[in-house]
Image 1 (spheres, one colour):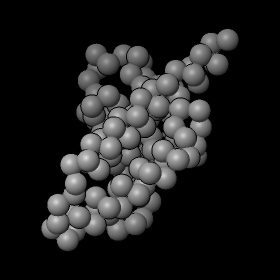
Image 2 (cartoon, helix red, strand yellow):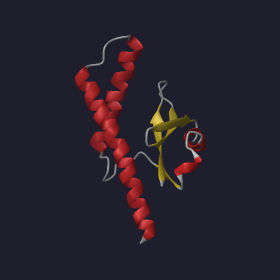
Image 3 (cartoon, one colour):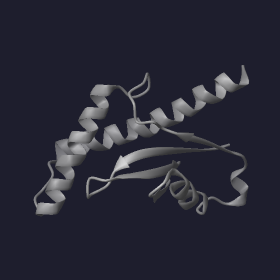
Image 4 (cartoon, helix red, strand yellow):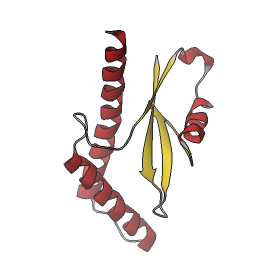
Length: 120
C-alpha cells in the first residue's frame, strides 16, 4: 500500500501551500488536491492501493509542538540564508534534516494509526 501524506507548508513568500509526500516522491500545489495530483502522477500502476492522509499541522503524539516550532524557525533561518547568499550552519542543517525526517516518519505513523483504527 502506498501512503500519501498531505501537509500544509509555508512557501518562500510566506503563503500557505500543500505538499504531498509518498516515500521519496513529493508534489506541491495550491490546494491539497493539486498536491495529491502532482505526487500521484509520479506513482506507477504497480503501486497498488493508496491511503491519503491530510495533516492538519497541529501537534500530536507523533510530532510535538516544540518540534513544530523548531522546524518552522530553522526553515525561516534556512530561507534567510539562502536569500541573502550566506551560509547556513552545518549544525543547523543537520538538525533541520533530522526534523524533516522525523515529520515524514510521523506522517507514516499517523497514517498507520489511522488505518489501524479503521480496521478495528
